[in-house]
Image (tube, rainbow, N blue to C red; front, side):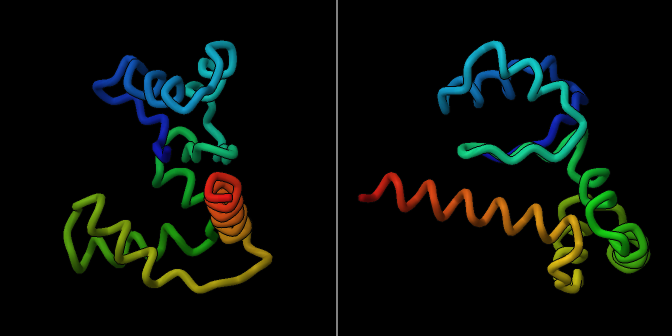
Length: 116
Protein backbone atom coordinates (compact mmCIF):
# COMPACT_ATOMS: atom_id res chain seq x y z
CA UNK A 1 0.00 0.00 0.00
CA UNK A 2 1.38 3.42 -0.99
CA UNK A 3 -0.17 6.79 -0.17
CA UNK A 4 0.60 10.16 1.36
CA UNK A 5 -0.91 11.77 4.44
CA UNK A 6 -2.52 14.63 2.54
CA UNK A 7 -5.64 15.38 4.58
CA UNK A 8 -7.59 17.37 1.98
CA UNK A 9 -11.18 16.09 2.05
CA UNK A 10 -10.13 13.14 4.21
CA UNK A 11 -10.75 12.33 7.85
CA UNK A 12 -8.17 9.53 7.68
CA UNK A 13 -10.73 6.72 7.38
CA UNK A 14 -9.50 5.49 3.98
CA UNK A 15 -5.87 5.52 5.10
CA UNK A 16 -6.78 3.71 8.34
CA UNK A 17 -8.80 1.12 6.43
CA UNK A 18 -5.95 0.49 3.99
CA UNK A 19 -3.48 -0.05 6.84
CA UNK A 20 -5.90 -2.28 8.75
CA UNK A 21 -6.43 -4.35 5.60
CA UNK A 22 -2.72 -5.20 5.48
CA UNK A 23 -2.60 -6.09 9.18
CA UNK A 24 -1.24 -2.96 10.83
CA UNK A 25 -2.39 -2.69 14.45
CA UNK A 26 -4.65 0.17 15.60
CA UNK A 27 -2.01 1.61 17.95
CA UNK A 28 0.48 2.02 15.12
CA UNK A 29 -2.04 3.33 12.58
CA UNK A 30 -2.65 6.69 14.27
CA UNK A 31 1.08 7.37 14.40
CA UNK A 32 1.47 6.45 10.74
CA UNK A 33 -1.37 8.59 9.40
CA UNK A 34 -0.23 11.63 11.36
CA UNK A 35 3.47 11.33 10.45
CA UNK A 36 5.00 13.95 8.20
CA UNK A 37 8.11 11.92 7.35
CA UNK A 38 8.59 9.36 4.60
CA UNK A 39 7.83 5.99 6.19
CA UNK A 40 8.60 2.68 4.52
CA UNK A 41 7.47 -0.51 6.22
CA UNK A 42 7.41 -4.12 5.09
CA UNK A 43 3.90 -3.71 3.66
CA UNK A 44 3.47 0.03 3.12
CA UNK A 45 5.05 3.26 1.96
CA UNK A 46 3.70 6.56 3.26
CA UNK A 47 5.00 9.69 1.56
CA UNK A 48 4.84 11.90 4.65
CA UNK A 49 2.52 14.91 4.73
CA UNK A 50 2.15 14.86 0.95
CA UNK A 51 3.99 13.38 -2.00
CA UNK A 52 5.41 16.63 -3.38
CA UNK A 53 6.74 17.90 -0.03
CA UNK A 54 8.34 14.53 0.66
CA UNK A 55 10.04 14.38 -2.73
CA UNK A 56 11.23 17.99 -2.47
CA UNK A 57 12.95 17.13 0.81
CA UNK A 58 14.46 13.92 -0.59
CA UNK A 59 15.79 15.28 -3.87
CA UNK A 60 17.69 18.60 -3.87
CA UNK A 61 16.74 19.49 -7.46
CA UNK A 62 13.11 18.31 -7.31
CA UNK A 63 11.63 21.77 -6.82
CA UNK A 64 13.53 23.24 -9.80
CA UNK A 65 12.48 20.35 -12.04
CA UNK A 66 8.92 20.73 -10.79
CA UNK A 67 8.86 24.44 -11.68
CA UNK A 68 10.25 23.72 -15.16
CA UNK A 69 7.64 21.02 -15.75
CA UNK A 70 4.80 23.29 -14.58
CA UNK A 71 5.94 26.03 -16.97
CA UNK A 72 5.85 23.62 -19.88
CA UNK A 73 2.95 21.28 -18.97
CA UNK A 74 0.70 23.30 -16.68
CA UNK A 75 -0.24 22.62 -13.08
CA UNK A 76 -1.48 19.01 -13.26
CA UNK A 77 0.02 17.22 -10.24
CA UNK A 78 0.24 13.73 -11.80
CA UNK A 79 1.65 14.97 -15.11
CA UNK A 80 4.23 17.19 -13.38
CA UNK A 81 5.24 14.41 -10.96
CA UNK A 82 5.75 11.96 -13.85
CA UNK A 83 7.83 14.48 -15.79
CA UNK A 84 10.01 15.22 -12.76
CA UNK A 85 10.47 11.50 -12.04
CA UNK A 86 11.75 10.97 -15.57
CA UNK A 87 14.29 13.78 -15.18
CA UNK A 88 15.67 12.94 -11.73
CA UNK A 89 19.28 11.85 -12.00
CA UNK A 90 20.36 8.87 -9.94
CA UNK A 91 22.82 9.50 -7.13
CA UNK A 92 23.18 6.69 -4.60
CA UNK A 93 24.14 9.12 -1.81
CA UNK A 94 20.94 11.13 -2.26
CA UNK A 95 18.37 10.59 0.53
CA UNK A 96 15.51 10.24 -1.96
CA UNK A 97 17.26 7.52 -3.95
CA UNK A 98 18.18 5.72 -0.71
CA UNK A 99 14.49 5.72 0.25
CA UNK A 100 13.43 4.37 -3.14
CA UNK A 101 16.13 1.68 -2.90
CA UNK A 102 14.74 0.73 0.53
CA UNK A 103 11.22 0.60 -0.94
CA UNK A 104 12.42 -1.57 -3.84
CA UNK A 105 14.14 -3.95 -1.40
CA UNK A 106 11.00 -4.21 0.76
CA UNK A 107 8.90 -5.06 -2.31
CA UNK A 108 11.38 -7.71 -3.47
CA UNK A 109 11.63 -9.24 0.02
CA UNK A 110 7.85 -9.27 0.42
CA UNK A 111 7.42 -10.91 -2.97
CA UNK A 112 10.12 -13.50 -2.25
CA UNK A 113 8.72 -14.30 1.20
CA UNK A 114 5.19 -14.76 -0.13
CA UNK A 115 6.04 -16.87 -3.17
CA UNK A 116 8.15 -19.56 -1.52
